[in-house]
Image 1 (spheres, one colour):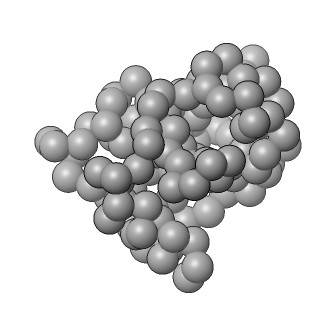
Image 2: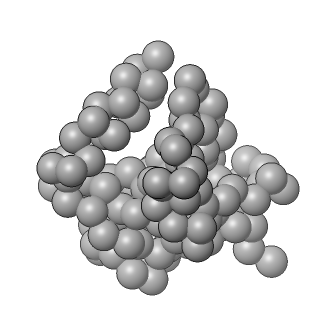
Length: 116
């Protein structure tokens, strides 16, 4: 329930949130599914593009049930399991310095992919 409220707050203030694209690699910790949002918690192991202080953090990476015509959805590889190495590309959001989430809505290129 707390995650659901957090996601709603993030969406509600998204126009006031600092947002940029981020790319990183990490390990899938736990999937989640709440009303209107679903995704994975990922431990960041390697930053390709984004703030250096993300390294080592556990970041939620998620899709929402936004209007797909207005906000194209990205994708989450359905083959991901806990402990898998993954690559992430999405919209990095922060509401305060050092606190990050990655939204996979806004571009069809956004994704969490299983690394081979």
